[in-house]
Image (cartoon, rainbow over all chains, first blue to last red; front, side, top):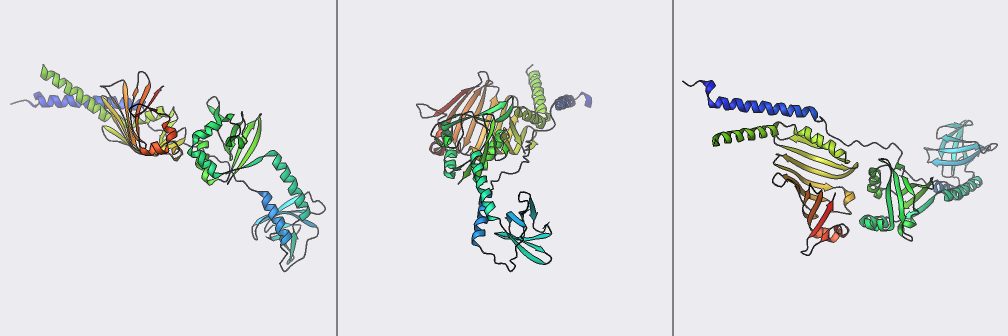
Length: 268
Length: 177
């Protein structure tokens, strides 16, 4: 009779088992030094509001034009004599107006629909004025035409001196997107770093007479912001580029001679 | 003697196979991810599964400098010591690359064998054409032979300028790191 303990098979099995235990122990030892979690992308959210270009000039201008052309057609035509309507925004039931007393025209108050001013409740907003109610009666306050026109002109003059609005064709954008090498023939832009941190993008060369030169960028400009997004990563630039078809305007903020300058482009 | 040697090699083989089986491949992959992060490369949102001797990743998103660069359907990683391979299937590059390359890649294979220890072989098949290359680990030199597709030749002439056209009509690219 052969003893089981002497069998070759048992000896082989026990050796294989020892190898298995040994390799398992080695893998467990290796596991001790290895990370237990992988790397996932964590994107820092940009809480800044989305850039929107609002043309107040047109809004006020339109209101002014309507005020001149459209006669008041409501049943009540009583004016509030001691108040001036300086501005309005909104439609019939939503929005606000800017009002002041005739005695102190520079002290303005913003009144929303449903709110009261000097005992008058703002009921609704018309194209050329606002309807107030008091003691069951309705009063219409029309836009202060003369003063509005004056302030409008002043504002436009001031704006044109501080920013430049240029028109950019969507076809041009599509052309340069398809031929990126053309861009780099006309302009050179280098990332500007402070240590490892990206500060912005420096314009190192602009070809005279080129489309890129028409954009108003100059040599040594540092582009630091676009549409309220800080250009501190390639991702922010890529996000802007990916979203190019959905935006109608680009606002670039550049550092020129250590001063911020705003360049605005309307995409048509 | 021969029998003893055969038994010894048998045990060695069994040891290697069991080591491969028990090796925490997922954790090794996580360590690799941490290394790639140093170069701003992140593989995100992938499902990792240990298949015993191989590791599979599916539905991965590849980011470079936090910019999404590609969607990858499947990655198979085989680490056998003597022969190691990474097979990448069904890659869709980010739309922002559409100015430079066709966006679909069917297969990418990266292999390293003990029989050619100084070179890592690269193979790629996609809408751009067929690419074969090698990376010399000693000289840190990349050599690529590229057979572009008609689409690549017609629509991506700017990218083709990066390649050198040889007399036999093939395109090559060399870079030393």
